[in-house]
Length: 167
Image (cartoon, rainbow, N blue to C red; front, side, top):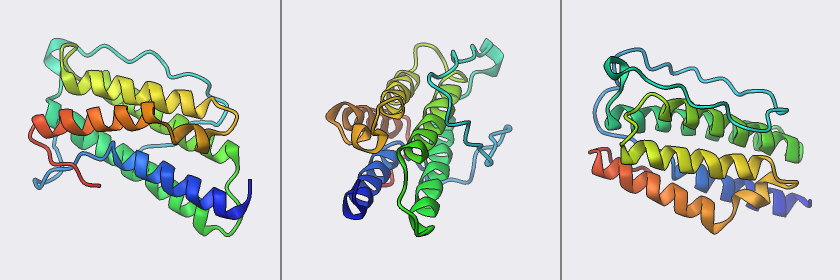
């Protein structure tokens, strides 16, 4: 992959990750949302099954969107750091970043109500991130209409939950 294509791929991937960025004008949510997401090992090939939230532990759609934004912001930071390092980003790096996004989005989805449109959108977006992460060329795989559609659906679901989307 040449350097220009790598940068285009990074920008395309960052744009797609921004689709997951749901953010409101209010302060950060209370109730234990962690701002320090970790990126899982690049050897992860599929997302773990989402945890099932007890009825008392179900978080609101707005909180789901705010958590998704935090995950997206973390992944964008990782992309920027990779590009800024001076070396050409590798497929393994994109796999690690997209796998991290998939795992975190799936985890967040598991904390919401099963009949939530935001949960459904998070799960679909996570599935698309997983498909891209498992591809031979993850950066190119992330630049596809299915991933874009999933990001748009997530943005729309977050808007209907009262959270504005930041692109």
